[in-house]
Amino acid sequence: MKVVVIGGTGLIGSKVVSKLNALGHQAVAAAPNTGVNTLTGEGLAKALGGAEVVVDLANSPTFDEAAITFFKTAGENVAKAEKAAGVGHHVALSVVGTEKMGVSPYFLAKQAQEELIRGSGIPFTIVHATQFMEFLRGIGQSAVVGDEIHLSHAYIQPMAAEDVADAVTSVALAEPANKIVEIGGPEKFHLDEIIGKVLAFDGDTRPVVTDPEARYFGLRLDDDSLIPSPGAKLGSTRFDWWLENVPPPSKK
Image (cartoon, rainbow, N blue to C red; front, side, top):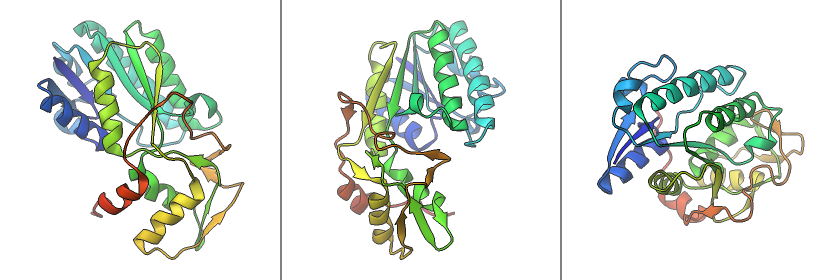
């Protein structure tokens, strides 16, 4: 089966492409560096020719109001190309809590993306994932206030990128659910405490301050904002193992 993975050279996409190919499918990585641009439509028709499934893992390069233009434009271009190619299943990776975070420009953009998918007429599955463990360091860096790191005490249930890729691969090979399915990590932590553990492991001595007014990419969190619903499919990678065994990305 031919599966086109938009964003197929990124963190999750490259893993999904490898997993699909290892299972004997024809996985095509579609990204600007492979000649496919969803914003302009360049290369889409050629890439989607003969595809049965499209997995959309592309993300907006910004978290501000420009994100809605990205998701709407890219989504419309992809849907048009899918209809022309006769694609039978559109899989999109989104975020747990998207429907509850409407005050954030980024999550308003994600809501618009999901509405477009539901209204496209193409069978679909939207995967809502919790935050990736690989992004925990970035969350800490985004919360710097002077010489301190200010974070909410809300819960987070992070998921290893490898487990996200496994789940997305399984969804891509299944029948369209025509709904949202949720995935998450196997353990729940307080956001301030887990970031503190990562910083300590890295030898970063900056203090983590628990701040109920701290924003998470512009959003004030409730206790359950970042937690999947009961019944979500959970990954198997535990945080302590990940921290010890998955090296941080190299700094270029």
